[in-house]
Image 1 (cartoon, helix red, strand yellow):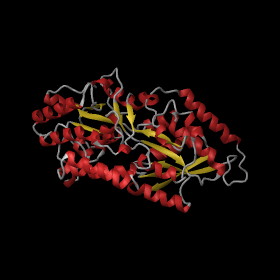
Image 2 (cartoon, one colour):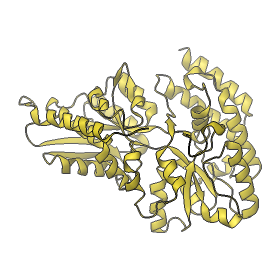
Image 3 (cartoon, one colour):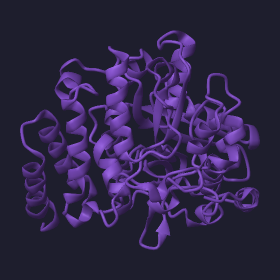
Image 4 (tube, one colour):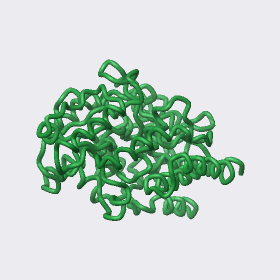
Length: 429
């Protein structure tokens, strides 16, 4: 994606003019004087992005203070829906999972922010994920994309060639088996128990694949490959991972696996854990995810991966005198200044090219060219395309994932059952 600093600054400047020009005398907290905005987030002790954005915006707009309201991470959407219905929700709230965006938008719980988005569209990835009815209802401030993490130390120990950005899934599987055989202990790769680890790539990379079609045949080769890796002993079996409550952080961080597919948020986590001693000290990097075929491999091509954006929207019940300030906050958070602030704490912003130099100056972040390429160049497709059926279909596909990975159903039977359920329980209702 091409980035334009001018476009972002233009959008912010335009909204700032509105900020200083509004009278709003009939509303408490008018734009003419000091204001306080409230912002919803979760897990503040371990998720510093919300405070970082609040402090950064206040520094740029001293008359506007952003107060944080913390929600439980596991029940964020349930609690937010309840607060919105009760009129107690904050002025600005994060779209934690794209799967639930439709619920908020269809329920008329978001302000139209097309004016903010218009100045960001050429610079920020993921905006189209928040579009419906010809308007934009939230803007992304971060956009994690799934990449391949690899332990250079274990690769060198095994005498196996490092990833170079040219891998298809067949290359990945062959390397996982080779590493397992030569390391005599650590597995070649670790695949976490989430359905994303299989279904996200299958949806993003398979031409014509669409969740809302109810045709899930595109999943078959991806599941067949994973089951083969499990049976070959190249990765921990799904049942063992669930029974033993394995975490992906410890599996890769403690060198139980030489490779792991995971979202780019793990860059900040691994960097932090190596610094604290929670993870072992070893040399590592990340590469583009393996590809369906050679057409999207190599550093002259654009690899295809997946990852949902994390966005910010505005509560329609916000005091009218504070609306311009809230829009200015969204423009800041999604724009270049917000991106730099997030990159400074190791978070992947929605505008990655604008912050590559900032991000790779952080201690503990790999410095190789392939890691920089994987960070900045990719086509990231949503795991949860916006649709009224997405949440229900993903629930069906979650059951499918468990059935296949646990071995309770073979791939073909599980997919057929999922298609029947999608038709009868979701699409025809």
